Amino acid sequence: MEDKYGIDKYVRSIPDFPEPGIIFRDITSILQDPEGLKKSVDGIIENLKGVDFDVVLGPESRGFIFGMPIAYAYNKGFIPVRKKGKLPCETIEKEYALEYGTAVIEMHKDAVKPGDKVVIVDDLIATGGTIEAIIEMVESLGGEVVRIEFVMELAGLNGRSRLSKYNMDSLIIYDGK
Image (tube, rainbow, N blue to C red; front, side):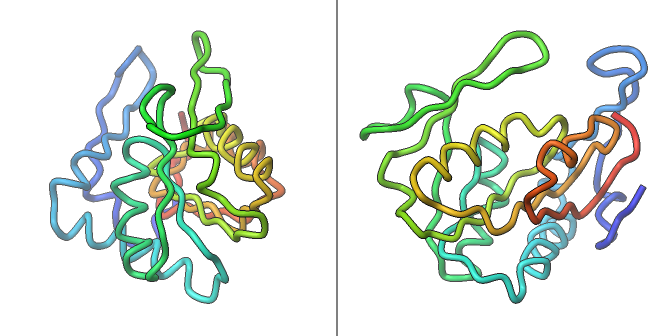
């Protein structure tokens, strides 16, 4: 395990959930602790020092939680990516594979402008499928993903290799699944 900012002590680890052999890393215990939340947000802010970007994007729902304070700290706008049917204006959407089935996410069609430099923030990278779908939407609108930030990474699920051509970082990297 790699833990750059001392955040692991705020993560509740639940063995054998949702199935035997899996250790569930619970983000809510970070959110509930003022110091854990502060260290997580401050860690992402620190990781973004020197990165030139125009906007922060976060997927529903924990990407909202961590992405909003980052946008605020850098005086940037925030783009929400939501489950299908939740946004009121014209959207673009992307279907992507889940472990069992598929899901569809969408964002407003006018959220990313051609040439925008985008930072994506989320709580967790596992297989990388959600972020890969988001990247495809951003690029289809003419944006450029300049950085991807995660609070936690499950290295055993190889999401990093799926996103290998992008600059990404995680505050905590767990070896397993």
